Length: 180
Image (cartoon, rainbow, N blue to C red; front, side, top):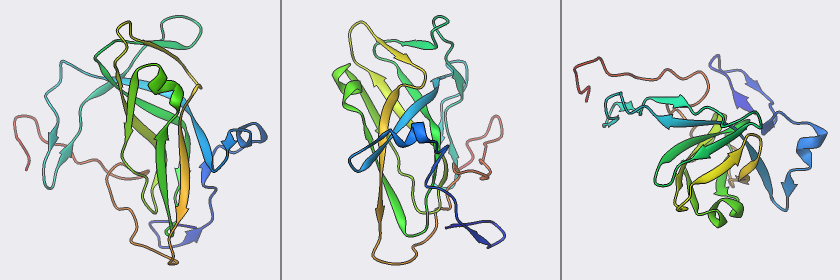
């Protein structure tokens, strides 16, 4: 169940989209996430601000494909945001455990995640840093991470109220100010 802003409760699938083909991506206790988009930091924009009341993340832009095969080339020593094709709808009595598929670290790339807390709705984003001396090629829709869902011993917990879920307003800092 997911609580809407109106307070009404509706049942949504844990993962969207769900198709017969997608159900094949369940291995053991985890569901594979596939890559939709890759973003890089915009070097022409100001540095991000992580304050007490303000979180003004880095300005990002999509990384273009290298060819018609929907493949990105990621450079050594650079970091990128990877966004899943799938969205999660986390009920109030569930949390997620996100992890990297081993093919990424065998390719000398490190992927880190935040968390998708109870009531979070949206796509999963992780930060990938490439360590291989020759960079890394990665194809759109490849499996790059997996998610496990874990329930709490209670019916409800405090709902996610962060700024990065679906329908949240991002707080931005006015140009020329620090905003804390």
